[in-house]
Image 1 (cartoon, rainbow, N blue to C red):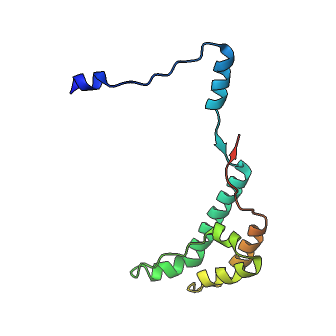
Image 2: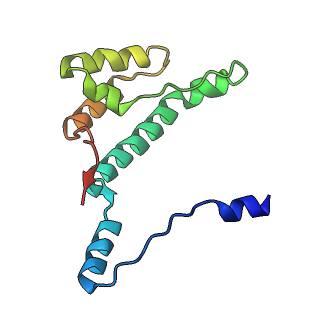
Length: 126
């Protein structure tokens, strides 16, 4: 079987000999996709804040219902940004309807934080 593999055609690539071609090759090699770091950081901060608030809202309820294994709800920021502003509050109320603690302050604060957040666009090529 080793003899068969040595008779197969091979593809080889020659490296450019001119310095101009080499630098253009390097530029192509450095092409990367980048996201706006500030937007990503704001999303991350908001997600961490949401997680902390949900843990606080559900901590007593989850301790009492630990045997039932009820997970805390998930709030998808992208989904919220896709619905019109007037529907965001009702969507949050629907998600949090099983919470035994008051959620109005959390919903109000989250809606105000969402106003300053924009949807992360497709990656930018730099």
